[in-house]
Length: 294
Image (cartoon, rainbow, N blue to C red; front, side, top):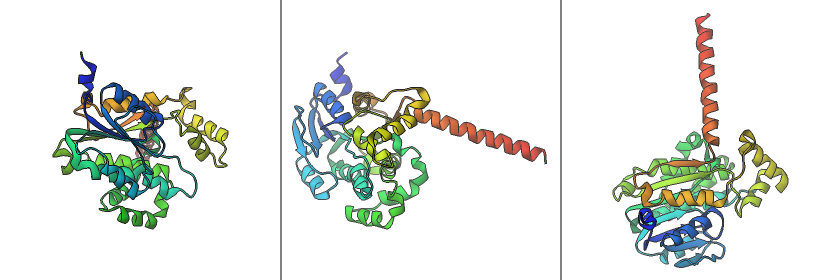
């Protein structure tokens, strides 16, 4: 079996953001090996042998527009992987980088996507529970322009206060809301997102500092470990543990997969869901028993 043909990237135009480091860098290296023509974008220099490397600040509409002008007229796969950690006072910046720029790029490039193309995002376990803000996220998603969205953010400080969490919840809401929309299904364009658990990347230090109330990296590292690893005596993932599956999801191997939020966290969120369901069932049983004794 020819693996390059199986993946379907050989000779195809692939656009990927965040390619200078971490999960996206791992994915970019694999895409190159699979024969893709890779157009890579990052705010930092990219040292991989891609077809074209572009530097841009993807929190800025004008930078995004300039990058879009330099991308090919036909795109077979789009991987939107850029993101930043949260620090106090950076709530709007996190919204722009971690969600809105990805929505904006998706919709700006949609007309260039080929029939049966794919769009794959890196979201996060941090977006777990996205259903709780779904209506607000859809309100934001349905706005037509960047400027309207910035005004919406300004009017909803209580939502963006959670910063990283709300941005990822919006991204996951976007995938579920848009996967069967006419603009995607008419061309059979698939959209999916991976939701990584604790992963060692170039952003690890930032995530550690942003998790700690005092900004202490060691304290943040211990807090993250307690949340993601302690319950199963586990270990953090490598960038390849996320980047490689993402490439598979965006490839022809997963040609019938769309609208999926794939948690790559060694089962952690499945366990959280299981425990919540068991507690809810217990409450229901206790309520029935109480009512029957009245």
